[in-house]
Each structure stands twice: as C-alpha cells, then as structure tokens.
Amino acid sequence: MQQDNLTQTLNAYPIVLFFSAKDNCWIADYPDLRYCSAHGETAEEALAEVRIAGRLWLETHFDEQKPLPKPSLTNLLHSREMAYA
Image (tube, one colour):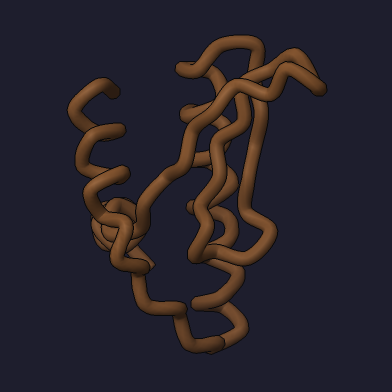
C-alpha cells in the first residue's frame, strides 16, 4: 500500500494519549488497533512512536489480508489530538 493511503487510513483512527504516573512516561494508544500502543518521555515522543507502530500494524494487516476494524466513535479525541500535533 502506498504511504499516502496508509497515512490516510491511519488518520481515521483515534489516538488516546495520557501520562502514566506508574510508568513515569507518556502512553499513546490506538484503541481500535489491538495491542497498538507506544510510550515516550514526552507526549510528542509517544505520539511519534505510536504513529510508527500504527503504520506497521496496518501494513501487517494488509499483507496478511485481514480485515481492518472500523474506527470507533471517539473521533472527537482524534480530532483534538491532531489539532495539537
């Protein structure tokens, strides 16, 4: 799949971003993409890492011809996150 299409597909999925006091780091997660999360010392680092993980997640699903999950109804979170990116 071309990078532009991959990015467009990935942008349809919300990202949940939060600070974990237990782990002392930022966690970014694609709740619709099972087990697709990342962490970083800063929010920006966690977001960059989860976007890499998301691309790899999608590439694997496309390569294995698995169906993609539908994006959840939490697109408001995604829209707010993208406004700050």
